[in-house]
Length: 95
Picture 1: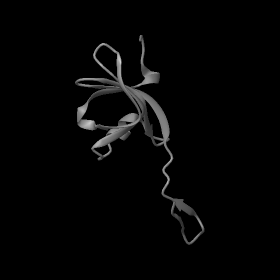
Picture 2: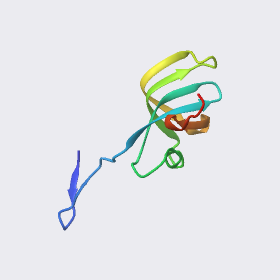
Picture 3: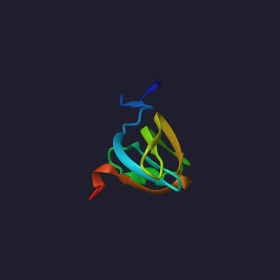
Picture 4: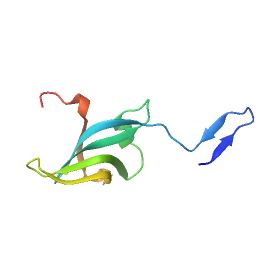
């Protein structure tokens, strides 16, 4: 890891602090349950609005149309163009 110092002695590193957010993601063919990571002062929509083509999902479970798990992995990279909707788990009501 590279550490840099400015003229006043302030330390800069390449580590970006992020908080995990459990989400449900719907694509045209599958539902994905997992965790996306956002900066502490931002929301999931802010992460989606970044220019990157893909979003990282950790602890991912891919479900078929009937809700049965077909894949599970520690890390999944999802093309944002495939996402129909995304909901943070803590905002789901009446489930």
